[in-house]
Image (cartoon, rainbow, N blue to C red):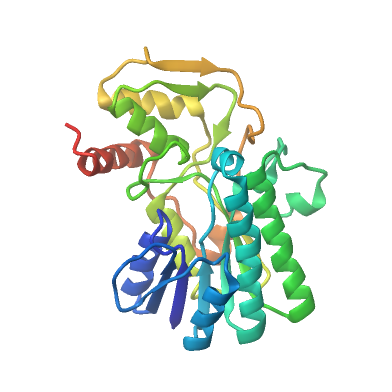
Length: 304
């Protein structure tokens, strides 16, 4: 199968590309930085001319649309970029899909569940009176509505997946990255960080996320939505304690705060549909995944 991955140099995109190639697919990569490689295409999806040219020059059976701005804080500090890339960029992808007829997999976020305080089943955003809590979450729900609208009007075929706190090697640190990435980096470098005590997550190791994403190429159910989440439901302090334990450090640089405003408090996922349809599996526990992620950061940032 000929497959395009937008955001194919990213923390999820790069290992997904490797997994798909291991399965003998013909995989091409789109990202917005200059890079080398015969099957790499530089493109900013926020600009229709650039993405349209790719689909004029190349035909694809399936597109994994991962390109997008990530995270609540990033969405607040760089909201123009967030909305241009996420909303306009996804609209550009849909226009291309409507014209060329390829199937698409879209990576949404668990943030779309907003202030929902129950188990997160895929139907919640349309069946319950919830409210998304920040620009990033709103942009991802807008993307999902764009996709549903395109399917209803033009018959486009897309699978939506909602990723729950994917972590692991390959996620480079910035202040806008995921909680495990930031905690490890700050603890390694003796930098202070904040732990929000009343927040819970269902973290997913990168190889488990990528395995399930790749399975969609073989089990494509148009119009479906899937939660890709880990089985371990935990509080944020547990993550911090595990990281400090593996590094042999105490918590003197950790500030404990009850709750973070404008962020989903509890993400208890129901991942049964992904297990049933896509063979989703949770093979790497936090006790296994956190040391692997610590070791990758040590090697990447030449620490220790």
